Image 1 (cartoon, rainbow, N blue to C red):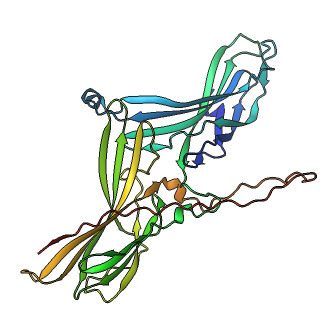
Image 2 (image 1 turned 180 degrees about the vertical axis):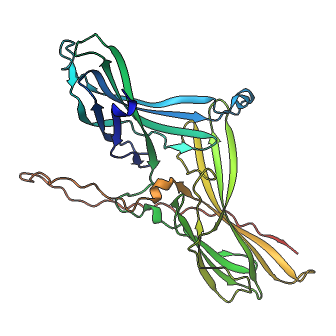
Image 3 (image 1 turned 90 degrees about the vertical axis):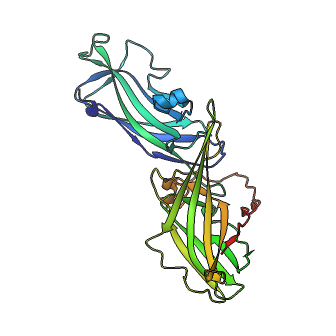
Length: 373
């Protein structure tokens, strides 16, 4: 029988969104479609969930062999749909008629699994598989045919949501707290509109500058994402990468090249790329950790010096949480709809308030003033 005509798997939620550091188990829901050309004796039907992690080895022998030498299973769960505890009589097997038969299922999966990652140092992936074992050429005689196994596989992506109150919907919109910095030539603020942002999104950065001397101009602004990947285990290793961000196609603001007025303020929108050039941030796990830092550098100049202009470099940096691009595709975080609830007769209600907890703003790094003529 052709493989595709036997069994297929459809998942209700192939992308699973989880809260950071949550102990809540999540559920995989789906449907198995079994399409048979003739009546068939079925031995078993089950769903399997598994996850694998590969971390790059920096031991010389492993690197020469191809790199990903540290591989291990990080999840395995099995759900039997047939036979159940009450369906174990070999003389009364499951017989499916020709045509389509559907099985729906719900399978709990352990919490605190690492999020899906795919980069040159770490690969974490998950998938669900539906498997059916049946007798071939049985002619409905139990035990006369050979056992054949057919399966269908579907990738599952585990995506971490930004920390905070999910239902409030404001967790990805908290500002990196601006502070006024004083340089020799000007006072300035760099305001980043989000602490957490999904790859493929736009990052808005607001610049506020007040010159403290005449003829101060901004010769250039560079925005970069610094990526740090830590791989632990038998061969610990830290790698760094730098990705420059360019203004997005929708950006309309340009920082003036001429001398700044008494006050200049503008918001520039930068594009975060999608692809292998950047990978999303992760929590710290026993085997790996991926973190990101936003670095903004401004080159200032003013009149003076032997060449007619003096230049100064000022920098600002802050930690930033890059999220999986799937988070950016969420229109909103909504509670799923349900049927009408049961009546509330004889129910006891307790009302109260939730404490609102605010975290301290992300600290800025020291400003580096490198002045030369």
